[in-house]
Image (cartoon, rainbow, N blue to C red; front, side, top):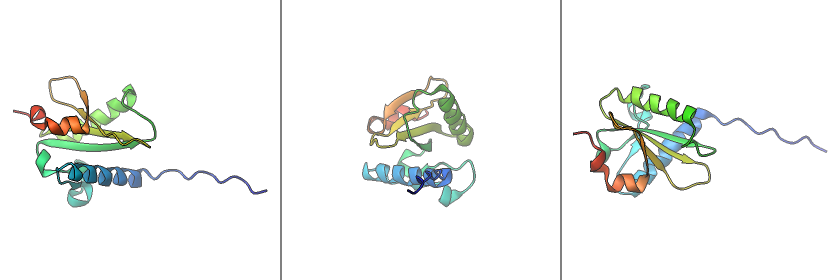
Amino acid sequence: MTAPRKKRPTNSRRKGAEAELELAKVLTAAGFPAERGQQKRGGADSPDVICPALKGFHIEAKITQACKMHSPAMLAEWDAQARRDSEGKSVPLVVHRWSRQTTWWVRVLMPGFPPVWLTLPDFLSNVNHWRQP
């Protein structure tokens, strides 16, 4: 009898890159051409996804095993990263999906307002509402 195989730990860098690529493909398919940001610009403050049609937004892509939309600790970490990396120059967005789901959720971090969760299609259909004046 052979011993059961140990599950290999997920490489967080690889998983992050996959999330960025997947989100870029989803945005492009929705009519918002996009590409990964890190390999284009580099640097820690570079957005995960660059989308010229979403200029004025800083996109952070997150894929997790389970839904983390209601985890105060995880949201605090994600929000802090998106706000820090946007450097106050753009509206931070945390775009989240969890494994085995197809729906992407957008957490809009509009300065001066409480964070808002929307589905990605709902956000994209009314994107101008969320732009800073």
